Amino acid sequence: MKMKLLGLLVLVLGSTISANGAVSEVSWREISKINREGPYVGIVVPNAFELNPLLRSPSFVPHNKFPYFDFAGKHFRIGVLEKKRVIVVMTGLSMLNAGISTQLLLTLFDIEGVVHYGIAGNANPKLQIGDVTIPQYWAHTGLWNWQRFGDGPKDALALEASGDYSRRFGYLKFADYNNNTKHSKSATNLLNNVWFQAEEIFPVNGTAEVRQHAFWVSVDKLTLRLQRAQMLN
Image (cartoon, rainbow, N blue to C red):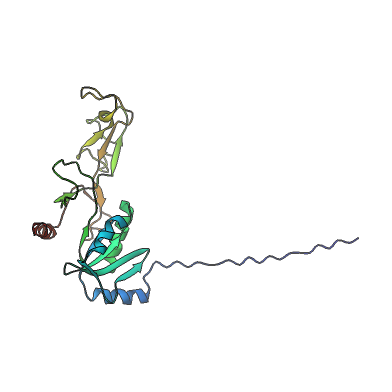
């Protein structure tokens, strides 16, 4: 009895997915139409909980021809708020999302200023729920240098000598927050200390790849004055 081996030819059809990071010609035409009516104030909002009250406010009027523009997963809302042309974008949580969304806003559109707003915690007992605060300075305190156990405030940090880190802005000592702390005397904690660090920035008017450091960032003086005047009204 002969056995015939039948060869089975399997054709695997692969699908290709093209990725293009450039802005299409159609999108650029639409962006150009939007920018002809600029400049705009960019409004950056973290999430829908904070965005919805603005969208429901009668003070915000969407544009009658192009009320929104979608790009790279972002929904840019175009309109007028208190007689000022604005473009509103929801970023999503985290510094990464905030940075990407703000950069897209500034790259695509004619923006004269950016306002970030949202809810926040408070360590000042004079402020109550519902109060509106406008900072004169702000800082991002999420960049730390974790000091090894056994070292103290007088000991140099790792990479401090090369200028990467410093002890300029103070530190948090975990032992001060132990549950068994008594009479203001801290007990040992293996987490030791974390030192707050300035951000590395590369200004657009600076030299490429030459870093600068910034911890306290001042609010634009004109914007601060306008916001204070609006609150008093």
